[in-house]
Length: 532
Image (cartoon, rainbow, N blue to C red; front, side):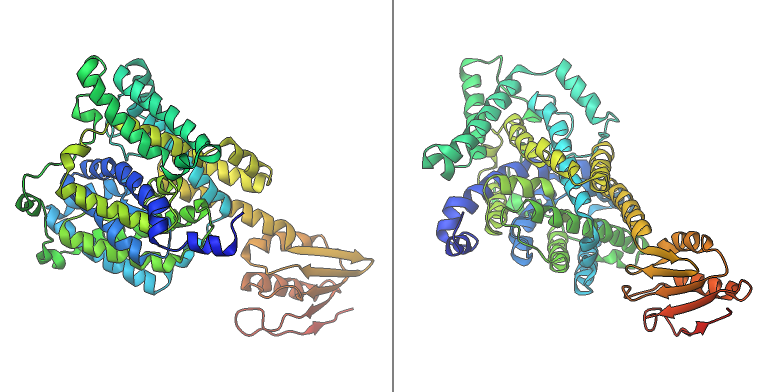
């Protein structure tokens, strides 16, 4: 176990920490993020360079402003449909960039208004289910890439692909028509990742200093170059199976790929609708992903969701101004960062700097990276998110935790991230209501005397239970309502009590309220009614 001084040093950005943890982790995230940025841009119908720009902004801007130490931001597959629809609605990509800037302004306002607090009300079982579901989706979506069946882009996490085929159908097609070269690369990369991880714990110190993911990427590039020279039948030549970064011929060419917003569309009502929709979806997804990132942070640091909102908002303003896609926190990249050993936000910042440098200086070199070795890295990341141990631990907590967890996992696998979380929240809410329904009110009877005790705060969800218990009291009776343990009594509950008091006039029943003062909304008369 780390001493307090060692732990504190390990959590502080420093030269030693950068060389040992954050620098190598940032390099791994950069290698994973590059094809994801390009894939999301392709799926969005935006220029490919726009995806790289938003990744640069996510790393170089959001990581500095965010309070999260392990979250990585960039273009998200969950926003691709909104981006494509927004471009079509507004008629041009420059007009859409204006919506991205306005979206960022909305997010900054939400952060200042402390709207990020909604993330605190998401049940832990749903957050765990979100992580496990994403892990399963990553494995399902990356297996075809590992087999050389690259029909969907690397960052696609939806159950139905653009061609209408589901993840399971694509996996079936990949198994029946795999390519030998990518299979060899991905299999050896997986073997290196698993073996390297074990040696990092028990072997020489070198294995702990160098991330296994970095070794897997180097192995993948080296293997494919060897195939090209000595085994042409195994060589991976198609750009569909390799990282495909636009190659500029000069700095002027890079500048020519930038697109700037068209602010003349600010008077268009559709722009404000598109911007607001983007802000809501990106904010919800961002806050939930930061909550999930805190869960996988080995140091269990807690981030501020409000600060995350305005950090993401600032990032979207900058991204929109220079021609990038809307961005948000992304669990896949955050998981890859933690898995590669990141300790602080410097890892995310490093990945942004590397995206910038690669786009300017050596994109051709990166284009030799097989997607199969990146798929192997992501499969390991996915497994770490959805281990059998996690399912067993949640099951032992009881069905009130396990069922929302499983519903969230299944919904994310068979729909998408946002819909899956919403379904999980609905299921979790049902169990919260059920729990309150069974434990909020108790009735004790001794002969004619009845004690109706509110064991905690009571709201409209307890109204049916209260009515059922009051119907069971046989008149005439002496009934005492005790609100000592309740800090708040909802108006619906009070009206039910009032109805019972009025009915007491005709049944020879006495009713007394104890400790109800100041616990109900609005003035209430508290009195003793005695008709005995």
